Amino acid sequence: MGGVPMNVIQTILLLAAALLAVFVQTAWQLPRGLLGAQVDLLPPLVACAALTGSLPTVALLAVCGGLWFDSLSTNPLGVTVLPLLVTGVVLHQRRHLILRHEPFAQFVVGCVAGAAVPAMVIISLLSMGLNPLLGWPSLWQWLVLALAGGAATPLFIHLFGRLGDAFTHPLAALPGNDPRREIKRGRS
Image (cartoon, rainbow, N blue to C red):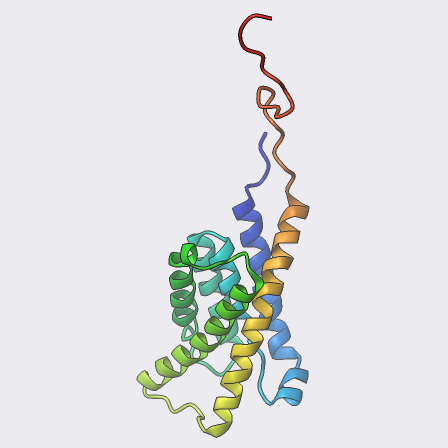
């Protein structure tokens, strides 16, 4: 019998990480006290899923992560889902253009995701007729979110790559495809 496919393992690991990240973000106030902004780990997780996973994984992570985040914040329920989904889908559709195995490119993608998601959430809140608290400190918070997303994305990609390797085993070589075998042609 075959093992569990890598996509299923990666999806389960990403969802567990998203649930843990949402819980830690709401329970742990140390980053907010030190940086003046609460670090959001969902955009880098979505960027990681978009660069390394399948589109259903990205969609499931965006929906579940966005709903979990909104249920523990003062946001209206579901307002974070669409920005996470749009960011993940755009990155997934363009990942063939990104040097996704390079840490610097992963950092840049994480910065873009970390900046784009909060900006789209603010636009969504404003379009709903709500008045989110905006001011000069918001620029600092936006910068912190972007840089934190950039720093976390390469770490997540490395971590989930290692976890994926730990939970799967390499495929066995087929008997007829031994690269050490020499084929002699002609008369001997």
